[in-house]
Image 1: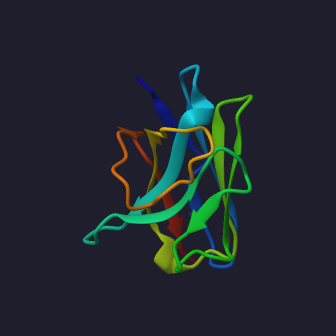
Image 2: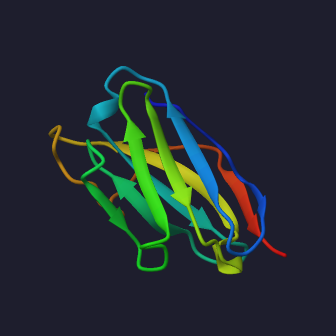
Amino acid sequence: QLQLVESGGGLVQPGGSLRLSCVASGTTFPYYRIGWFRQAPGKEREGASCIGYSNSSTSYAASVKDRFTISRDNAKNIVYLQMNNLKPEDTALYYCAAYRASALREVCQLNRQYRYWGQGTQVTVSS
């Protein structure tokens, strides 16, 4: 069982930055692939980014590529999502989610079924 807790959301002006954090419980954290998803009111949930075992194994949706950076610290059981140059269309409830990989170096996939989900943190981009 893995528990995920997000933090770091808030209100920011267009062009601003925020860093979201996702802290996970459990002793086999490196085996878990972590994804950040978001859902805006009236819209379907969208996968924004995911990360494999290391910071060199990442994937991004086209809508956030070159603006968002995902990273993880396996010693602290934490995954970050650094969001720069935020736009009003980035406004959403952001969730971190996880699934357990079969092998340590297995890459992450945004379109996989994620078994564990956090409660979400709200990000609002508005002037």
